[in-house]
Image 1 (tube, rainbow, N blue to C red):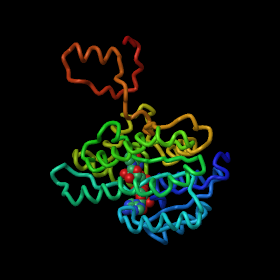
Image 2 (image 1 turned 45 degrees about the vertical axis):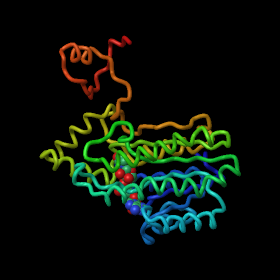
Image 3 (image 1 turned 90 degrees about the vertical axis):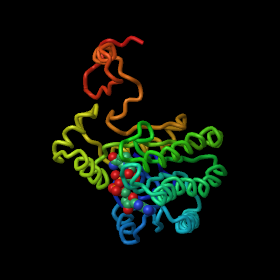
Image 4 (image 1 turned 30 degrees about the horizontal axis):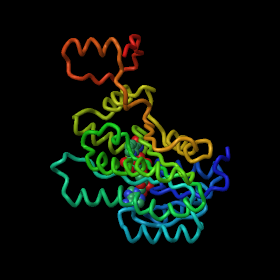
Length: 287
Ligand code: NAD
């Protein structure tokens, strides 16, 4: 498909995982794609591998580097129609193990980078009466994840930015979206699985079986699953959608309680609010 023909995109944190898959998909959809990465060699290699238009190098948590890289992109590309903002993951840990410096660093990396890029790219989108601001966060913005305070909080700020902007930029043909992935198998996700299995004292295979069982679709996701959604949201076809948080999580987050017999029985039985994490189909759907 070539739904993004004629569009210019910038994808950040794009040398592997979700960012890489999104950049690759945008290229396949016909966009001129620029990559932002931390490491020159790895970023150049990714550009060559997917046939992207070019790259800039910056650490997302370094404001000056990021500002310079953004100016460079605008210089090479003229303007950017589509921003896919993606970052590295902040470190996990119990609340009291996190220092104020950890919080400052995570805010700079995740929230400030979204803010700086949005401020830099928005004027040309407004002028051209078209734009897509896509922010990749985490399912933690819908339901906070244990041991991921830095991620839950800083990414919720990014989600709030996207939702707050939507009505202001909508009249100019600019839409904003938050992608909220979970259980997408990448390097980061594998590290997190090992970390959590260790925290719970479980063998990794057992931990993975349990996690997979909690997903409605009974499989882990792939970066291509996120890229497919990003390509649609970036296209003209999605012009009537904006200001939305999209879980890309195989049904991991349940935003509406499931009213099932199991649910009713547990409530009547006095149990605490149950987490219904089974594939059972609800048969008693009364409101
Ligand atoms: P990944 O570790 O495979 O890729 C992360 C990318 O970010 C790499 O290219 C890395 O070089 C880049 N990066 C890291 N720090 C950077 C910095 N300071 N400046 C510039 N680039 C930097 O991770 P992934 O699984 O593809 O996830 C991407 C993001 O989505 C991460 O923040 C992750 O925490 C988050 N996330 C992932 C999942 C999932 O299921 N994989 C779920 C929720 C959230």
